[in-house]
Image 1 (cartoon, helix red, strand yellow):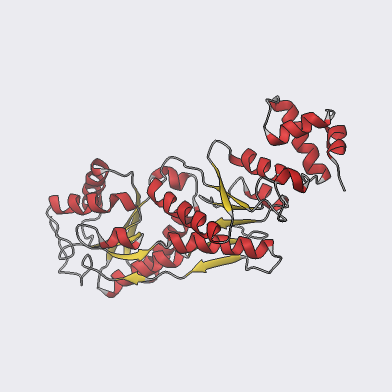
Image 2: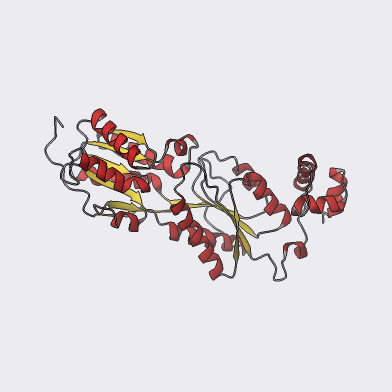
Length: 340
């Protein structure tokens, strides 16, 4: 078994320095910390059980890596976090929160110090820089989100690709021939965040399959942004009669903006949202929607982690099928409008 003295020898420091570098209890230079962590990885060192607070065989702590970046809608992130905490507490586990500032370094520190038994990772990108680290660590992890190459990982999410397809298929059945997706803020797409990218892929594939005219418009949240995007849509897509909204805080402002421009929902314009069901149901015009099941996803992530900790096999990817609920915001397409 690798000892702390072996790590110290490899890094060229004292055992106490290794301990401080891993625990963060005393300030250590960045260069020394990097040498210690490199030695830990090379030797496969694991902190002893007593250092991990494992009187019952583990820390009974799950870490939640939930970076709050620009373009992220904090209330939705909070729903996911609450569901993870609730599910963990039901199994007598606490949750350690890792913020944006900690990033990969925070994940490494948790693994090296044994501060948590396992890890839930959120806000996953298609080519997330954290993935190589997660594959190399002995710390079990579950991602809420499915990257482009999920090999060697455990992932759970709503099938956002199928969700995008379902929205378009609903509009196509109602006779709509020109549709648009009003999506997340631009930076979400620049980061290639999984949920946004998969939904665009599904939306575009279904529109092409049904031979619909379609376009994708990233959009910031807020009433000014909603007014600007509504005006742009009507200017660039004069035959538009169906809109998919994948931007929760934009739902009511966008409904208001279209109505101020003279369009009634759903008589002139049908609207489908991808968002939590309560948000869609409480919109000013109750919105037909595909629900984002944040509570179920957080709970499933915790259950998958606990299965991994017990040594039970788990699937590589768990995709929840989307479900569409019809409400007042969609209707059969009216006669095509040639002028507005």
